[in-house]
Length: 123
Image (cartoon, rainbow, N blue to C red; front, side, top):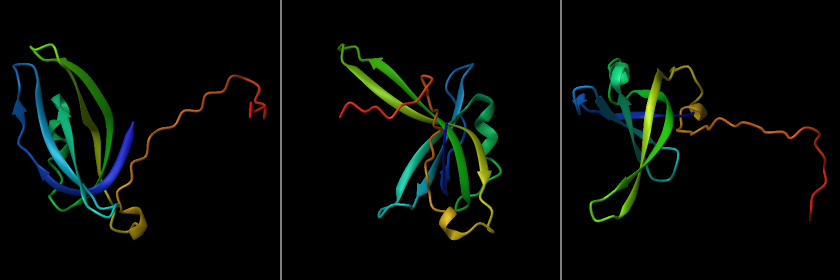
């Protein structure tokens, strides 16, 4: 799970891809770096309406999962695609300090421990 804070740039209309699958895209502007980054997210199925309560230009925080898939072209060439699949969207409060409104991606970190820890390093 990841999250990022930025400005909602645009939101598209819902697309019915098949009888059982629907999706919706939106773009978040990340102004944390020297040049703005426009990051595209996807909402699927019952989550398509999550973006309805937000307006373009509004500061939001998006919680998302990174999805990847493989596709084989008819020529046999294999291609890989990534999708940022949003599952929760929150408004960023105006009372927060300005430092917290810049876009930041925060991955969940899981620490694995094999039991007793030692400071034995091989170098």
